[in-house]
Image (cartoon, rainbow, N blue to C red; front, side, top):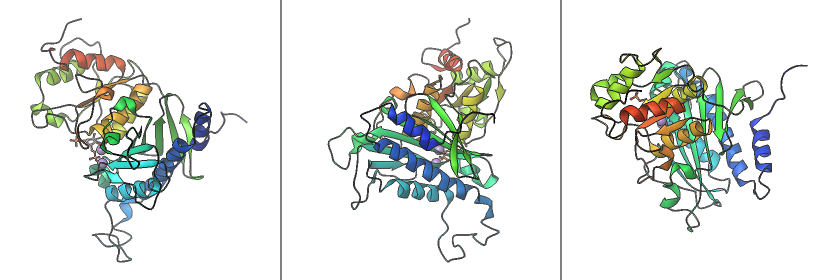
Length: 342
Ligand code: AHG
Ligand code: MN
Ligand code: MN
C-alpha cells in the first residue's frame, strides 16, 4: 500500500478542536453543518442543466411546486442546515436584506454566521464553476439572541471562514486561523477528504492577474497603470502576467491561492466602492488568503481591518500574493499618483 492516510473533514475538525481543551464542541458542530449544506448544494448544482429535460422549466416543477432559482435554493438550504443547531444567535445572507433571526422554537448560541449562498450565480446557466462563502464570528453583545453589533464585526475577528467551489470537483476550503486547508468531495463515499493541507499561495508564483477588463474605461489612473504594468507595457517586468477571469470570485480566488498572482475587483467611477460585499465575500476570502500567506487590501487598508458600517456594504478588493499586493500599493494607494520606479 502506498499513499498518505485519508483524513475526512470531520476528522480534521475534531483534531483541530482537541488542541483547545476548553472547547465545547459548538464550533465543530457548526463546521459539520456547513459541510452538510455544501454537499446538499453541490448535489443540486450538479443537476443544474437538467431542469428542461426533467420538465422543470419555468417556475413550476412536475409536482406543481415552485422551482427556486439556485441562489435562493442555496440560501434556504444553508438556513435550514444551520438554524436548529443551537450554536448560532443570528445569521446574515447576501440574499436577504435584513439580519436573519434564529426561529424562536430553537435555542441560540455564541456564534454568528454570514454567507454568500451562491457566488458567481450569473455563470450557472453556462456550466461554469460557482461557489458558496461562509464567515463565522463569535457573539460579542449581551443580547441573548444577538444584535446588530454581532454581525458588523471587522474581518480580523472572524473565528473561521470557508468557501465551497463547485468546479470539476467540489472542494471545501476552510480556516480557523491555523492555516488554510482544502478538502475534495469524493462523490462515491460522500465525504470531503483532505487533499490540500496547509495551502500556501506561491509568491511570486506563476504570475496571473484576474480582473474584469470590460470596466477599464471607468478605472482610476492608478488602476489603469497597475494593469498596464502587469501586462508588461511599462517594461518593468521581465515577464508580463497572464490573464484569467472566471467571473465567479470563489473560482478566481481558488486559482489565485493555488497558482499565485492577484485577483482584483477595484473601485471605479461608476462603483466607487467596487462590487463585492465586505461581510459575505471580501472579509472571509481575505482571512483564507491571509492564512495561506497572502494578503488582501482595498487599496488603502487591509481588508481584515475594515470596520463594517452596514450589512451589505461593498468594498474594493485586491487579494493575492504578498508581492502582488505590494505592487498594488505602489500604483493604487492614495498618493501613488505615479508609480515609484525601482
Ligand atoms: P454573486 O453571484 O454572489 O452576486 O457574486 C458575483 C460576483 C463575484 O462572484 C465575481 O467576482 C463578480 O461578481 C463578477 O462581477 P462582474 O460580472 O462584474 O465581473
Ligand atoms: Mn458573490
Ligand atoms: Mn451570491
